[in-house]
Each structure stands twice: as structure tokens, then as C-alpha cells.
Image 1 (cartoon, helix red, strand yellow):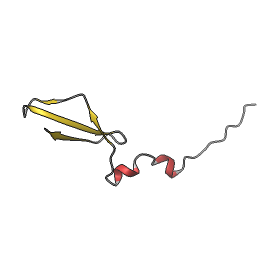
Image 2 (cartoon, rainbow, N blue to C red):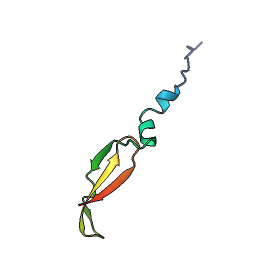
Image 3 (cartoon, rainbow, N blue to C red):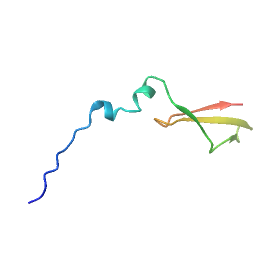
Image 4 (cartoon, rainbow, N blue to C red):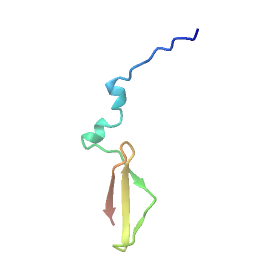
Length: 61
């Protein structure tokens, strides 16, 4: 006979960890180094990505 494995339900706080701040507009912006130059506009841009949810925003220099 096999061992009985107890199943553990995840709490709502554990499921929403890291997403609740982004939902309220408090992103954790970090600089994304993949695309430093915009070809269409011909100028340098900075691309920021949220490390929690993956949203992105750009800022032209």
C-alpha cells in the first residue's frame, strides 16, 4: 500500500504575491538592455520592464 500524501491548498495571499502592487500601479521598473536604439525615430530610448508582471514602458532621451 502506498503512502498518503496530504494536499495543501495555496492561500490567496500566496497566489497574489508580487501581483497586487502592480495592479495598483506600483511597478518595480528595471532597465531592459535588449533594445537601446530606436530605428524609426533615430534616437536613443530606454526601455523599462516591470520585474514582477512584465509590463513595459519606453522613455526617449
